[in-house]
Image (cartoon, rainbow, N blue to C red; front, side, top):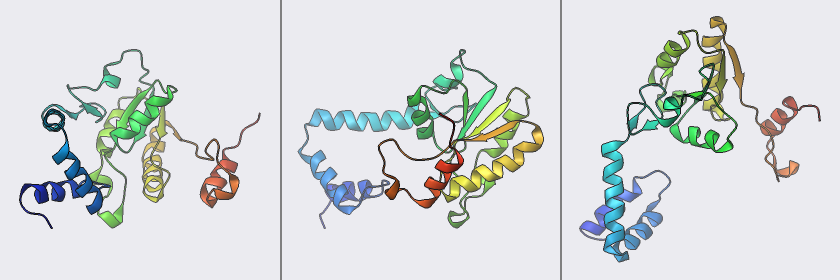
Length: 197
């Protein structure tokens, strides 16, 4: 459509997840008209993230040193380990302020259609952590979709013989939601996870 650098930028932006051709074009033209200082700051941030950010050697969360801030935090308990799919899931759980244990980031979920099996995830590393005997409860916090459920089921089967309590995050109705808009699976889980008041 366009020539040279602007088309190259549109093409590269269009390769980002969730950015379609029209969004890529809008972003490219925003960058073109933006203040050069802002563009330099963006380019620097992109370069720095590739140079500095790595995966934590313990839990595989994002970090700028050997271990992430959660693994360095001595106030957390080692007895409860929460398994998530991606580093963004750690952030979501941390925002609640409810969890004081440790994490393990799998790096995805089992998805045979995409060619992702258990060997493509950090399951061996998880089993090695569990083998130390410190963890008493494993919380499976994978996404409540087909892939997340398959991953949680697989992990539960692998871990149960180790004598570790395996739990799954409850799922149900969002606050402020209407029952008529809830899908059957979510509504069914809300019934299963009901509690006394």
